[in-house]
Length: 94
Image (cartoon, rainbow, N blue to C red; front, side, top):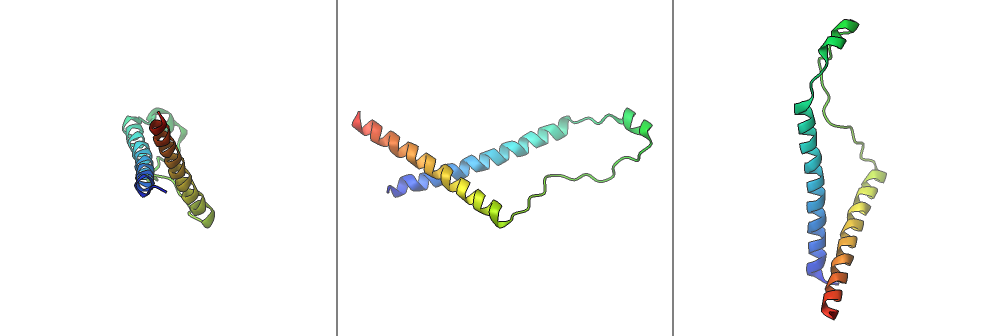
């Protein structure tokens, strides 16, 4: 097992996950900035306007979701490791 390639696989997987989360945050910020509520239809219904706003989602981390997250991370790192080691063997043969 190539230790350098294994470390690279873990780092690339971490960067991929961080990039995915950052993209979702930026996308949520853009959607929030561009949202314009339709106040004309709300005031005619007679219900009071909402005074509190909830941001984000509620995630309950039970043991099953933790195992799935760790397994997904390991599978993604293993897939990267397999692809990179396969590419290295292929280029050495050529």
